[in-house]
Length: 329
Image 1 (cartoon, helix red, strand yellow):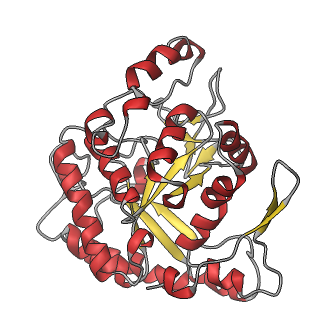
Image 2 (tube, rainbow, N blue to C red; image 1 turned 90 degrees about the horizontal axis):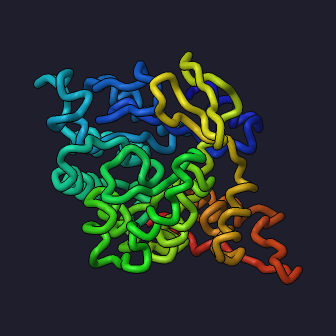
């Protein structure tokens, strides 16, 4: 991270805003490399937090990593810090917690811990509101009450039936925890209330696009980052990856999805295809992530302001960055 920071100050890596970690504190590591998952002690967390000064923007952690049924439970000792201490240490150093990779047995308990992280971050972080906490991509590795994707030709035979069972038209903020699940429902409700920013994959394979469309309708585009999960290699941290027939996802050896293959351009096409205009598209793929990285005002101060696009009617639309006090409170 120090080397990245040094080189970035020299003008390199202009297209990289910062770095993120997926782990190490994950209750369920699924497609992530197992050796990147452990329960750090205080000195390790302090080292991770110190990277905020050098460009570490967020780290994915599981608020329920220390509870029963978590992969890491057997490794937790009295020497390990509490969840509140971890979140305090991260946010005071400018590193955001991103919630994800939950245990599946006790969703109500997990939901309470999600709100504890949000509350701690809101009190201690320099970035309140939706900028204080992020998520890993929605519906990934969490207890859900419905099927949210159909990835193989065999599964897609049942897609329409599955979408009907999901009752997307009945979803609202009041019943979302019941229909979708306590954990994703809590995340969506918090995003709607401006307490965190959701990340969601619009590649059509991590999450069905009809499901994604309904999430945007409920939460609003200003509470969502459209992420790609794209990697350009067939290995991850020494873990070999492969593709299967019928989709473009990367799988690791145990059959878990590890990453995707689609570019941000493909995601933008998909978001338009499910009925959203270019203002929504650019919110989720550009302005919301720039705001979450605290880079929007810096761009606004450039002599060339890249805040415009040509819409489907061939007219140019212009956006302006929010006033500084709306971004950094």
